[in-house]
Length: 365
Image (cartoon, rainbow, N blue to C red; front, top):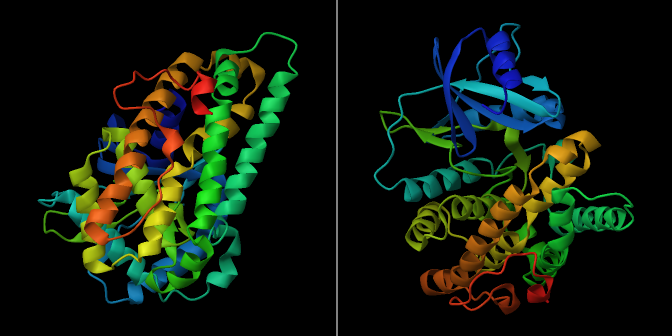
């Protein structure tokens, strides 16, 4: 668990004694004296999404699909979630899981089936606050502006900088340039056209799709979890976020990425232009910019306690793994699906050159 406070909160609200917890992609598996549960988190602001969640759930229940949505576990007070500080927590009862023979292919299939089941969802105009559809360029630029503003603030600091502040300053050039290129790439790849042309293939996506949202029980029935993380957006978001999460976790493993894409295309073939939009999402340093926003909001005393060197190591590892993904992904989709994706050659060093880290600003120009 993240903290003792989180553990005590869950035990108090749900009435169990927590014995063990381990992360599994998007969720945390809890072993308790009352059985196994899956814990998911979402931003606290999502607590206002209940009508949207209910509407999507009702829509899915009326579709003829071959998957089920897990049922939320209520708190002792009868609530479907709890909110503490800046996080919303919700639980599902665990199931007897059995992984498919090729879990990557099956995950792609399940995601495609979920998207297709939401393609006829009505009422999306009522839930604009939970929609990111068509807004990627403006959202990305807004986060980059916040990063610019914070860098300017750091330039004016008279006192001693924390180790995290130093990381943000030394990595600024690379990360900001990467974000700007991602926005330009997205627009050049026909993003607006893809938004319009793919609405018929799915209207609901996840905030950050990862393993753990699609499950299989011992009877091989497909199950879907993570409803408080649903948003209105196009399917390319989930595919791109899955590739990023998988690459961050295990490095670029082409056979697994190819299998996931094959599973998705087996159910609902992607348009050639979507592969380029996915590449733009892979370029965008969203996780790092979210980290900056979270760090900015901390009181000064807590900022001093953040381990900048640890974050530097994580960032360098992540950027190194994404470099390979950004090199290899265009070749993969060209070979498998005939999609032509222009590469951004300045992003990487020669493979035999030892990584110098993002602190070397001259290497990012």
